[in-house]
Amino acid sequence: MAGLKGFSGVWTAIITPFDTEGRVDWQGLERNINFQIASGVSGILAVGTTGESPTLAWSEHTKIITFMASLVRDRCGIMAGTGSNSTTEATAATKIAQKRGIRTVLLVDCYYNCPSSLELRKEYYGYIANAFPEMDIIPYIIPGRTVTALSPEDLAILTAEYPNIRAVKEASGDLERMIKTRQLVGSEFDILSGDDDLTYEMIARPGIAASGAISVMANVVPGAIIEMVQKMLAGNIKRGEELYKILAPLFEIVTVRVEGKRNISGKTFVVVDKFRNPVPVKTLMNGLGMSAGSTRRPLGKMNAAAVEVVRQRARAIWEKNPEILRPIEAAYGVDINERLKRNDCWETQAY
Image (cartoon, rainbow, N blue to C red; front, side, top):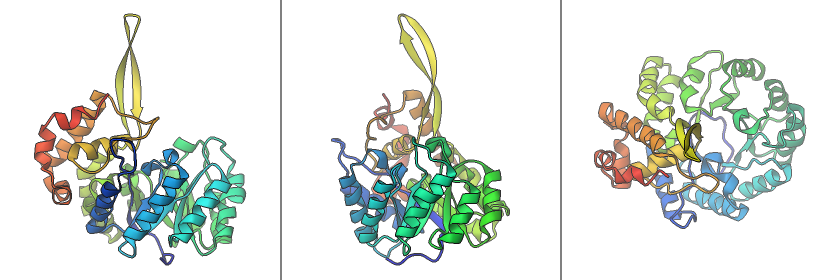
């Protein structure tokens, strides 16, 4: 699979479905991939963090990449998440992706050991870009999870030194940082949104001019997100804004924050629980009857209040714009209206 000339449109950060025993659900994964391709996505990200890569054994990681590369073939683009907080591990994973015919990899900034931006440039991104000159390398900036970040300046130096670094996944939430990135890397470089709720803003702002998104909610509503991005890239910002407002209830539940109660020695305490991706999107998919299954420990389930938030957001979309969710019915053989009404479809998703 040849390297791409550029990155634009919608790439789905696909979830990894598990069966009741916690094993990879290969049939479900195939169904999800076919749904994405039929919807017209630009490409699929295999085993990113949305795909729960931190809890996949490397043998599973390899099997999933192999499975997806074989299934996707040339029907859409494919990139593999091969990042790690170990350059040795990331290099080995990138080599595996290369052997499976994948020519694009996404590398997340090194979490926990948190190298400086200079170290990230020299000992991680630059090292791997130099080792695989024929592969496209996409840095993934998400300091909220990694507590470190490749700076716009070091990214610009990398793009000058390595022509195979031609895109970045931006999930910093810092629009001013993104404007600086655009100033330093030039107009031909692709900035991809890594935050669904910021995709509209990142494309609409001339100072950022993002070319698309690596999306979480595209697992559920790829068609609508594709239309939003395509309309905006074609200059139809008005229609893009309309779709963004329609989709906002779903974008807002990539992460869900609710108050939870803890009872200790007869006293009740309130704790704010923050349920992070992919727990909410898997909860939504399960509730709607899509292939998702459980998450892997230490991720688990949300509390009942959080599940109800997810359910109500889906219900709001269905009541006002059912066409957004209707493609799920044909792809998965479900009745969305029925599942939104049935309590048992949602109650089992909570602790």
